[in-house]
Length: 249
Ligand code: MG
Image 1 (cartoon, rainbow, N blue to C red):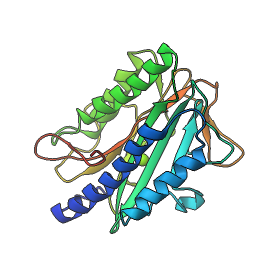
Image 2 (spheres, helix red, strand yellow):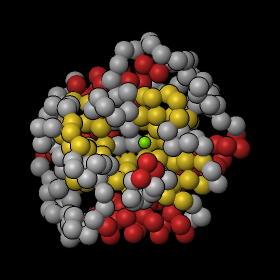
Image 3 (tube, rainbow, N blue to C red):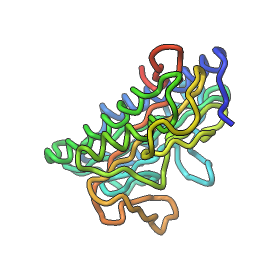
Image 4 (cartoon, rainbow, N blue to C red):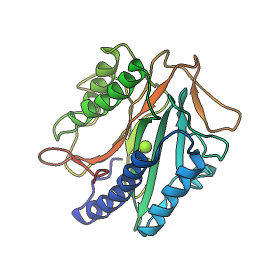
């Protein structure tokens, strides 16, 4: 069942989203060669707690941290560690979730570490563009498949691939609510979008093949072929007009 949110609930989700956005904004400032993913974890925890929120990932199905920090061929669910120190030319995907008075915000960005190759830069741009293509379909009266199809088309037309096993999702009192929102699919299928629906859209894009595997830590998902991967995510609400992005400042 897809839960429609009241204006009171949306006010809380706006707060949760703003806190997530603050963390990501800080990451844009501090990500550079020499910083560890544990440093980033500490920055995120500090901001989330200072703002009166709770890190939603920590303890979720046993995940041990407040953020997912996934480097290069890691797609998602990388665990922060003092041993993972960023190097010039890396890319890092940072996924953050916060709960504010019972409501969730969830967003992700992929950042270059120092200078990256032109093709890597293009991977980041295409992934961000895919998120925007999904947002551009998030209008009342459209259907869920329109979002999925737009993301897939945007990415594949530019020579990259979308993840199959991990999807966007409804969000609200739970981090993962109905519906699942695949990053691939057919237009004009699935539930019709209505004002008050809240979605986390999150294309994960790989330069190579879409197949994945999970490392022996039980969490970190990598591309099976070792190709680079990027991830962008926003939480939004469908309205009577333009979709409102809840995870931006
Ligand atoms: Mg998410």
